[in-house]
Amino acid sequence: MKFLKNAFAVAIGVLTLGAFPCSLMAQNVDASMLLHPPADSWPSYHGDYTGRRHSKLTQITPANVNQLTLAWAFQTERSGTIKSSPLLVNGVLYFTIPDNVWAVDARSGQQLWHYTYPPNKGDHIGQRGVAIYKDWLYFATPDAHLVSLNAKDGTVRWIVQVADVEKGYWSTEAPQIVGNHVIVGVGGDMDNLQTFIRAVDPETGKTQWQFDVTAPAGTPNTATGGTTWMSGSYDPELNLIYWGTGNPTPVLTGSTRPGDNLYTCSIVALNPDTGKLVWAFQPSPHDTHDWDAVEIPVLVDGTFHGQKRKMLMQASRNGYFFVLDRTNGKNLLTVPFGPVNWASKIDETGRPIPNPKKEPSPDGVLIAPDEGGLTNFRSPSFDPKTGLFLVDAHPSWSLYFAKPADGTYGWAGADYGLWGKGVLEAIDYQTGKIRWSHELGPGGAGAGVLTTDSGLTFTGDAHGNFLALDTATGKTLWHAGAGAYIASSPITYKLDGDQYVLTSGGGVLFAWKLPSASR
Image (cartoon, rainbow, N blue to C red):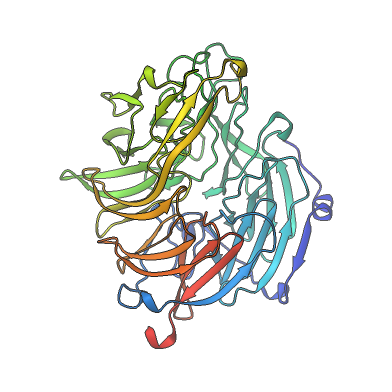
């Protein structure tokens, strides 16, 4: 691990201060706030550790949501779409695009400070956000470094290397804080990259432990890959973190990597203090279609078929919805939530088993879903009142090809999307049946999903509209145009008696609230 001197790190970073940089107070985010976030905060990627992206706020209701007005908008004035989930602590919002972090006043949208990471060779495909602990932010960079910033003014405390960009590594995820650990992952779709989940010390950046997703590069008959590019979830009672891993490489050919290719395309449960594997479940054994399993593991306590359970739910990119017992990883339910034609059966452990006839071939094979998957990185939401798991789905079809000229490395093939659309689906977790669906438009997918105790679902469509729907029925109650592609997941918070809903489109952050007379 490489450490850069603080003075040098500050010198190469660009920091722009707003009008009141000295007025920011210490944030003091502790374990208690992360475990039980107050209504005036959103201190982690999902809002809390469960991954449910559900709020108990009720000021905005189905009866008054049509009166939502724009409180403020913030333009990044940088190239790049906001894919991050903003954090909120003590009235300050923190959000990102690749190489950039902003601190913005949550009441007015005024910039407080802006940090720019130096130019680098990393993959700038996207950035999911930051983590915060005590008075420090943690930011993953495109060239696979982790930066610790002072949350009060954006100055650099330290920068450490997580992986070597020259080997093809990159990083996009929002780190996660669990106890005295900053947990980060890495990306990289090149062959011969061994990927991992790592915990570092929040004070120094020194490595505490590392969980390797695959065997070391060069191990015979094993896969590499398995990138870990999305934040996981955490159960404090079981003291387990749940993380999704990516697809194996070579991506579209499995001839050189026989077997299931553990632990790629898997949900892994790890001890956050040691990094030791407790259990694993593999949604896509021996994947040859680029369907990672990094989609959010959502934690729900409740009854399943009449029995109390601590459950983990995931709508996976491969087209299947899973319900697991998160104490041991045992499967409770596996069911497709859209068109799926690549599996031959569901085995006794609940895993879809690939049909060899649906492998990419020189002549092409018709596959559902397409390479983007039946869902992707945008967050789902779970509404405890209705028992609905709401997910941005992408019914789609594609042609997959194997290309011998590509050899047995890297992508090793090609895929061509034929048709797809966006649909918000409300899945009954007891049965996997879709209780209602809401069309989001042709082509690509919509936004992530947020639900509230008042019975509202917030999301976005493929046309660039923000939507408020009735959670029970899927009926549209309000919409507003973003004027740009929506690639983030909404959050909500309450300040000075006002409930805000925060959305983004393109490079603009939008804050919505009710007029005083409507509350």
